[in-house]
Image (cartoon, rainbow, N blue to C red; front, side, top):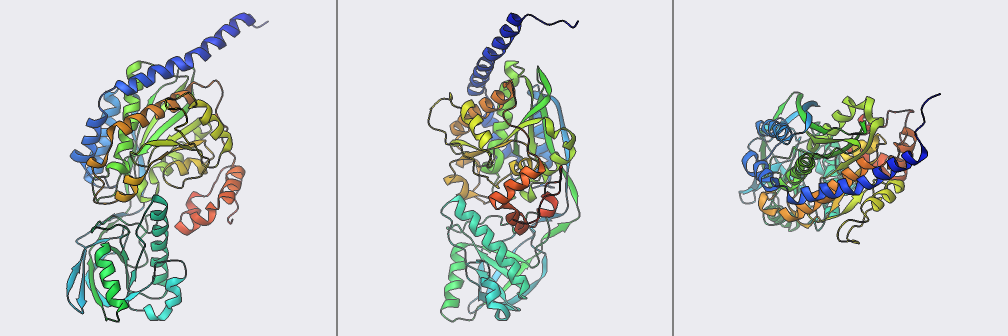
Length: 492
């Protein structure tokens, strides 16, 4: 007969495990609050390494720095995992100038993945509205052979910025359909601020060249056109376009002490665009992930489940880091209890999004119910198509996305203004405490906080959120559609 421990012993063991949860969490929180290195890490990433576009020397330096930092913190199994990118792209010396009625140069930056224009093209400029669906198509033949000006509204929030980005994508596609030569997009931000605009998430060249122009310059030439002036523009964009290449994810672990084959993942993307220094997007959260990892390792705590920390590469090009992670770890996704992704700047944390999962929302509210400043958090079930969290959501893995105050974030998003001086270090440290509490709390739970969804459940969620149409619009549905268990419907 197999040995059965006495019921009293089992009860005592269970009670001891329950009491250990708050003790470990409290120990970790104290370590996160007092651990040093957060600001130094951020200065290294923002100031010493600088912008970290995938495929550049700076990104390669950042990968080595991340790997070295995890190892020095005492984490185990620290490694680089390859991330394939289908196309290399870098901006050349962009030059956009008005040649008529009076010559002057426009402040401009090429859109990401715009085709190269090595021999200048010149054409008559034509207004094409704000880029809303159908606007350019309506103008039709009148835009053939012309350079199209799209006048986006000034961004006043992260949501409005997202809508303007959608409108620019629509305008470029429709302008190509009607035979336009190129598209100039008026910046959504004033004071001559430029940023890296992207019109697709598949790392493919756009059908025709496009560039962002400073808001003041764009509004000036729009007024000239409205007054009936004939405006001609010449542009050169000798962008550097190359074949597929590899970047990497940085992965490291603190092994679990009870269920080591189950994982709770905390991640942030390491790459950035090449304007500014990529500090709010997303060095602050890379520093947060490393800070949490270092602080937990310093305590010697070993939660029940393995803590896995990932710095994703290639997010800005189209979530390629998390897509590569999912592909290479597909056999163990069932053992991913949850993922936590931070990628919304360094503003105060208002809570976590559960991507439409009410079951997960209840668990997060319970886990963080005793956190400092009760009532501060406003967790949400809203689905954010924002970052690497979405890749895990498509695989049915319970995924949390940090939702933060974004006034500084959206105004400098992908721009020359995304620099270290915008960061509130104390705010990042407070967010790190919450991230650590969430990570360790999930890892210490006796039961999983939520089950992995099947492909059928993911498909139902995609339809309910209206996201299939969104993914089709972005040109990534075929690559990202759920592949597990059953074929997913291909329409909303």
